[in-house]
Image (cartoon, rainbow, N blue to C red; front, top):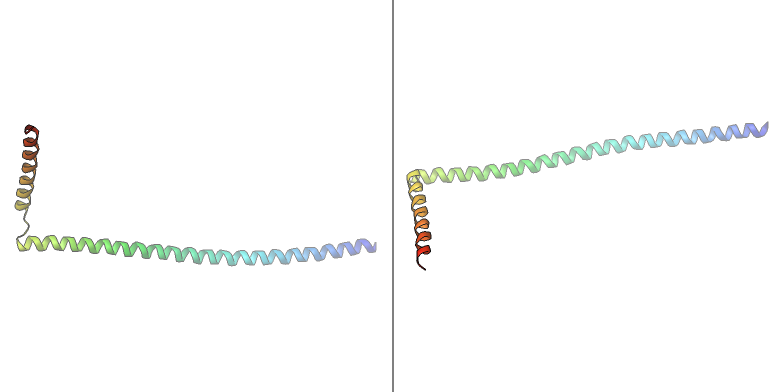
Length: 105
């Protein structure tokens, strides 16, 4: 009988130890989850910052290119007729060179 009582008391102690360990594990998992959420949030913010910086750089380059084109047009250095004329002459020159080199042999 004494042996059975001792076994029951030991079992009760082990169950309490197991319950304490379970509570510590639960607390640790909650801490880990909150740390993981903070880390995920930081990574997302960093990703968005990187995208914003890259988007700003692309926008700045596009604005500079557009401003340069408008400045060229306002200075008269670049007009649609001039572009078409130069493009046509370049194409015509390339074609005539290509055809003349075929017959030179």
